Length: 320
Image (cartoon, rainbow, N blue to C red; front, side):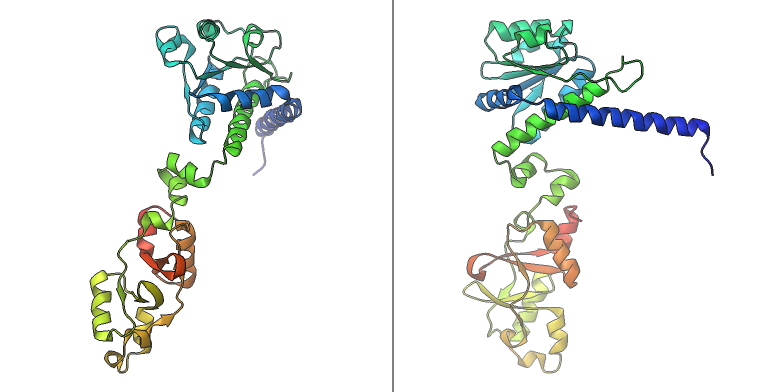
């Protein structure tokens, strides 16, 4: 199937837009300077929240930036500038920092929030495309977007400018995140749902605290009862809580002849595969799949047994 002239034109437009925006991001990276580090320092000093605001397309970008801040350890919220003029200024308090977005720097709907920040001494970071604009003149920290054409040929649709603003917000969030040593464990606290939350779960979040255990001198008749009662298909063999081995279905088959005449210690597999409570559940699942087993005993210091995790626990939690 050959492409029509129209198809080729669509592709050409798409590539032009993406390359133009990519070029603008290169300009932005090169243009970052002291104002960026001043903005990071100002946010780090804040005892309250980062209040992000913008109108129109800048507002949509602002909502995403606020969400990224909040999910990476910097408390933030978006306040719509028009709603701010009708009572939502009360959402901004001493200790907060305002991050205001406006490509022109002259958006009239921002005037009341800007005046509020000046009246009550609330630090203001401005991001705009015009160095001499009202927003950047009034801001405590002014970040100027580099001059770059919008992606449309008419130059009127906010595209390149919003892409740069979004990237700049991400850069601020990640700089703050890395300074605060924000870890995947912190991230999981703010993302408990969905696939992302599932991938960050640890074995300790899923394991059963009461693992089936027997002593090494336990007769296999009793060990079988312990296996059946627990329902995991295995039983750990431990002494004073410290793991020595494990009895699995495979061990039972290997000792089928005269099984009941043996003790658990004689039948067990020594030094079995285990996991720690801090192991990512996705890693435990991969290990179980790779070794074709259904359970892992969870051990801590000195191989002390802390619990057991079953492959079904991982699957039920959405770990895959």
